[in-house]
Image (cartoon, rainbow, N blue to C red; front, side, top):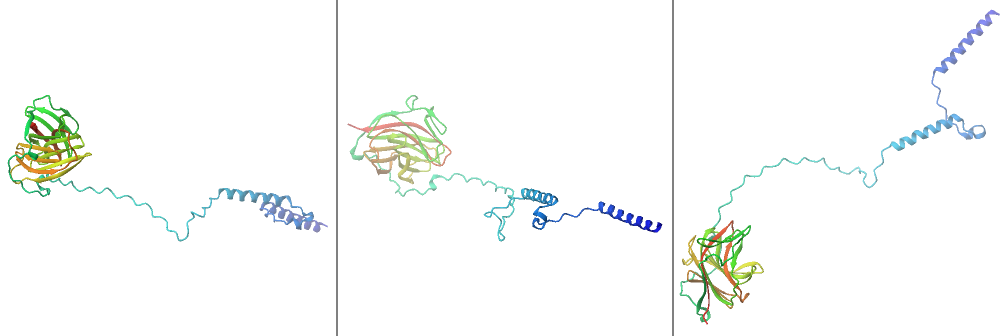
Length: 311
């Protein structure tokens, strides 16, 4: 009787110990049950809760995933990616500035071939007898005085000064009187820029872009030119070798005959060039200072005269 009771107690103690050990371990995950295999086709409650939890986690992972690249811009296996940016090289110092060569005298230009003139007596085209109609020693008050950023017209004690700072163009001063046939004459000299400029007289002046010009340079150059729609061209030019043109700053008397399309240049009483051109048939007359290379050409005019055909 007592022996059976002891065995029963021992058995009960082992059973209790096993039950307590089972409570301390983690319960196994519920198995997924096919509702078709359950009585009545119902899904147990623990299976439903497990399924909802899995679906929630799956939805969160889908939302947090990086979006896939569109097929059009996805990197292909054989595609070469651009290299990383190469830093710009440091600035390479410029070579030291080479000093500009000194200005080449105009005589080095290749002039239009022209025979060296032979000194002759003053001729009169078409048998014209010239008569002085106007003479001016540049007493103040008769010629325009003005200035701008690249030119100046003014009187001085020595005469009338035209300063030209415009490269490859002419600064002029003309009177308003109109002539069809005229001889215009002026005496002047360089006060600046003898090697890079020229000076002379104008006839048949219609406006600042249309006229004839007769000119000489300080290196012996001479020419007959015209401006048409503001474009300057030389109808005839050359370099004097006879000594008719006084070089450097020495004064020259420049004369231009404008006679119904026949243009004649005289320098110090010597005929240097003649040409025919009928672009302009009449107009005003005046003075011109031209500048080829710059930076400035300045001329002082001492005398100015106009001769007209004697009636």
